[in-house]
Image (cartoon, rainbow, N blue to C red; front, side, top):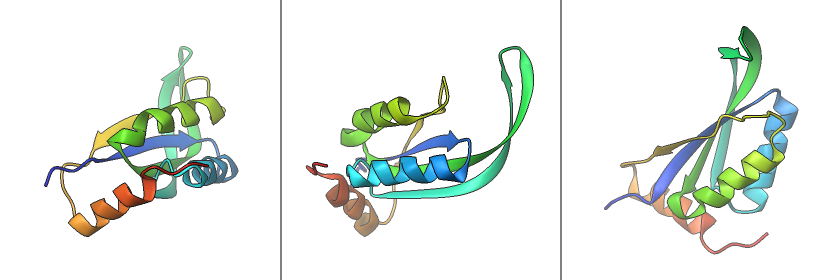
Length: 109
């Protein structure tokens, strides 16, 4: 069975912002699950090396909900250019993948 699921990765500047994003995404049924953990990020931005503490959100959703999820993150994110990366899920426990699909299917906020 081909998976219709994907994982979206984004970062937030702190836990409060991360939790607000996660709650908004879940409230709108744009994802079935959001996991978060703290990281230390090193990156180039505006010509300088940046070193920041961030929170990574791993968001499980479907291909069908991706565009709306991306738009939600982009609109509600405090960063000028937020990290939004879609990773296809090419396999997994069928019951889990079905849960992602059923949790995000045809739901309205």
